[in-house]
Image 1 (cartoon, one colour):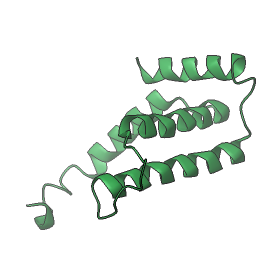
Image 2 (tube, rainbow, N blue to C red):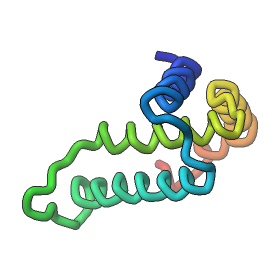
Image 3 (cartoon, rainbow, N blue to C red):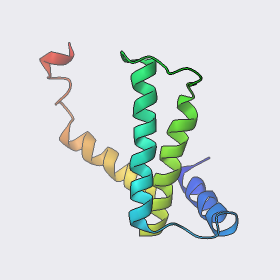
Length: 107
């Protein structure tokens, strides 16, 4: 699935099953909540925190939740995420062409 297809499918789901989009501010708060859930899971899986009794790890699902809400926000604000990601690659390739290769900390 392309990013553009994902944006279309999320929009289709929202406008049928989901009835309508939450407003942009609500979706931003939901995005922060989903990122927090992913961060908690990362801390327990790769960090020093332990899982609580009955808590399970599903990184893929938590990452998909973050992506879903980000796609909702992109759809609501008219952002084409494929174009935005390509532009971001272009920016990083120009700005950071030697930055990481020349970074002594990464060796």
